[in-house]
Image 1 (cartoon, rainbow, N blue to C red):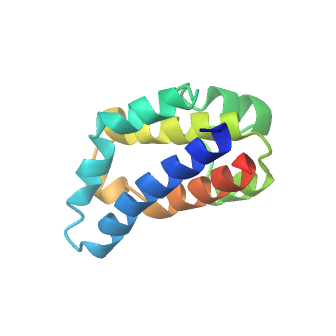
Image 2: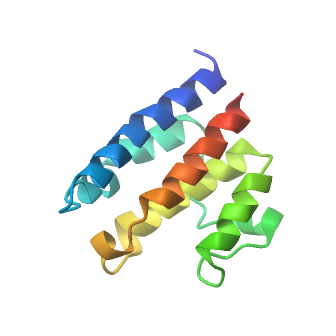
Length: 124
């Protein structure tokens, strides 16, 4: 299977779980997303690295602890490197998986949807 097809399969698979999160008022499925180590494996299998946004920050001058999500959305639209975007996606997932204080309250499906859409476009 070609890399573009693998990326698109990744996006479809995990977008389906985002749909379930949005459909569930209790947001219990958030934990199914952030606790599923298969996400980590899938990212690694695509060559993405959990680099705490370092590669994204180096190219786009974006630090998620200092900049708004709106700025991230603009930068994602301008992103031309699917590996760097994949690293950002992996890093955001890891934030929720490991560092977030209140995952249910903080988790935003919109962030992942925007990033997944652009990732799919970059894959071709």
